[in-house]
Image (cartoon, rainbow, N blue to C red; front, side, top):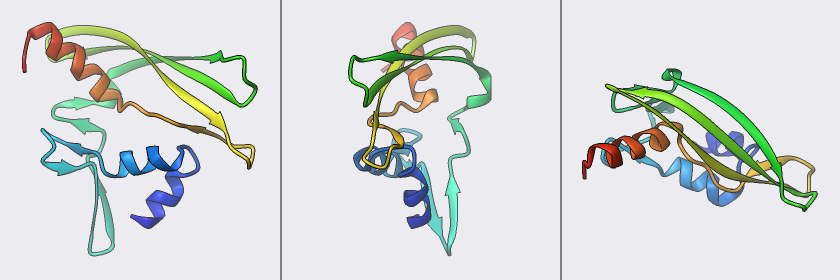
Length: 124
């Protein structure tokens, strides 16, 4: 888990790293990442029955007027079970003191797709 945290720190700020590492899936029953006997396990790109591979992505970067901050816009289209869904969400990105860009927030792609499906179906 420590190696994962070090790796993620290349892409995310500290609080976002901790949020990703502590994320739970399947109605919050299971951790997204888990280490057992020195082996790191991940939910494998699936949330329920939805694979990240099912989604088409386009990315755009918006300037914020600050040379050290950008907004990454993710536009997506995906079939979720029997529905064609699409949407867009934004994630903030800042340049650190070391010159590397890191996300300061992050949305798991499948979570972004499941939420509109649940709203569309009126499922709670």
